[in-house]
Image (cartoon, rainbow, N blue to C red; front, side, top):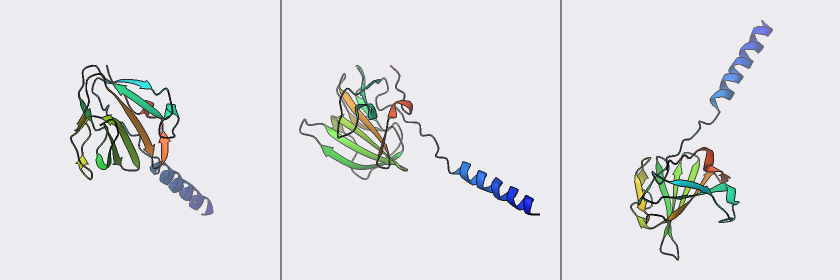
Amino acid sequence: MRYSFITTFLLLLLLHANSQVKDTIRLACPLQKGIMKSATQDGYGYKADMKMIIASVTDTLVLSPVDGKVDLITAGADGKYEIVMHHKDYNIWLIGVSNLMVRKNDQIKKEQPVGKVKPGDEIEFLFFNGEEPINPEKLLSCKH
């Protein structure tokens, strides 16, 4: 009797542990024909390998990489914007957007246009799980 109780308990514990594993998030490329390259310098106090630079010779629309909510929009001195989005426990930063197509608190869908850039402009992409920076290279695939 004790053996079956322990076996059942361990099985339930194993099932619970497997259900707690976070699902892998897949991010849409903010520029449909974007070319990804690693950043060459730190930005915002984060190591260069924790962000991606994305550029496209032809694209002008910046697309949301996730379903989520626009948490913050900040105008930079260069006339470009930072858009901070939230999806589940994740925070995504798009930096270098020229023209906005969303406002703070907007609910957005994956691949919905959130702004524009000029062809050849670069945007910075930062990805966080909570406050922990994550290298987005493995989660983000851009085709060129």
